[in-house]
Length: 350
Image 1: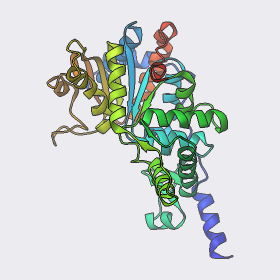
Image 2: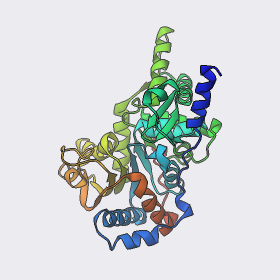
Image 3: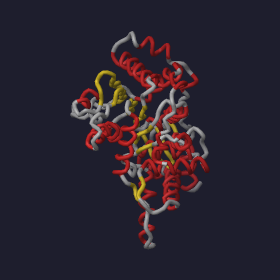
């Protein structure tokens, strides 16, 4: 047997078990959360965080932002986030480019993430064109196809500046026409006018396709499309100003967390002295506070910057993939979303 056939066989063996995304509708976490409220440590923190999220959903004036950093989408929470959007449990998304492109858009094109049943030497994985996220695999050849799709979308647009929201909307439009998965956050966001922002968008698989778009257009002497990070900040701040009362459901932290929090300060600088701090805030993270960061400060610390009110905030120090399903299932089954007004903030920029 040739080396090529051996490699194909080995790759097929390693990519044999797909990640199955959790369905929060298939189980009712309310009894678990109710009992956790009477426990201590992280269990009680999670119960309080879930209560705060339910208060966001029950507050008729509250617009809710889902904030995602890290790899929970690849790890099995992808359909969870899509269900939050489909059920009108979030009104906007701020995320890393990887969460939106390498994970959600990637699966929207029909590709999959795979469970690593074994983890051989990473140089072996490289030789087989398999990328690893801890114990999860991605087929690099499929990821390159995703890059090329981003390139094609960029080529189809007028050569001007776009916020990440505007470009991701084009990605959702593409999936609506050509996608292979109904339960895609990017696709559903397009269909429900829920804006998605990625403040560091090119730090993802999209970056390769967009760089190729600009280089190829420049070689041809043609203008090219660009991403406008300032427009991102301006548009998100416009939503914050018009929304008034806001709540944050944050998985991880870093740039997406700081970006959404900074809208309060930006609104004040623009002369909106009466802008409210984010009234509700939940953060699920394993980041540490000892280095002075905690993936962009604890929520109480953010209050000193005028970003988050401390009355209804909760840090949950846990791996998000193990606790988000409980929080989301509890909130889904309590049903406050059934009577929520649909915001459709994306129409603000139509």
